[in-house]
Amino acid sequence: MQATVSNRPILVYGNQALRKRAKPVTVVSPELKRLAEDMLESMYESNGIGLAAPQVGESVRLIVVDVSGGEGKEKQPLVLFNPEILSSKGETVAEEGCLSVPGVWADVTRPEIITLRAMDRDGKPFELKGIDGILARCIQHEIDHLEGVLFVDKISSTDRLLNEAKLKKMARQAK
Ligand code: NI
Image (cartoon, rainbow, N blue to C red; front, top):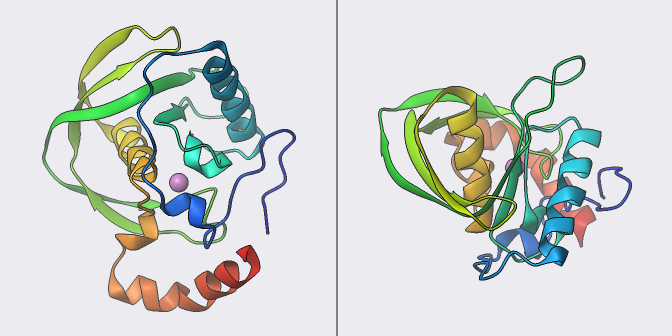
């Protein structure tokens, strides 16, 4: 089962590509820039706020994020190559979902404020300090994807139990 998008189908829970550690980017080639653009397109079409390259079957440390708020709002796409959390503090709980785990939403505990290092879409390194709110949460969720980690790995055992049947069904259909 795959979500319906035009050019880059999003892989669903149970697909082993989602469980691999993604490879670092050395040079932001034209192909990787294109991949980032394609990922943004797939993300917007699916009404997502973030997408990681492993979700489209590419084992590359690349994530795209836009938490600006959807239709009618000005888009604020972020393209992050080799994103890395340098420091974090606090703790916050909020509900998450994932384009690769359709139909499942559950609370996840994460650090509240992060400092991030990454390369932009032109390969230029930069740092972002004091990121919080939904942007901090989304970036952490997407970086987890680069480690082969899904948000459902981090939910409570109660939520896990509640969603067990859905997850099993997805995993069966992914094979
Ligand atoms: Ni996700």
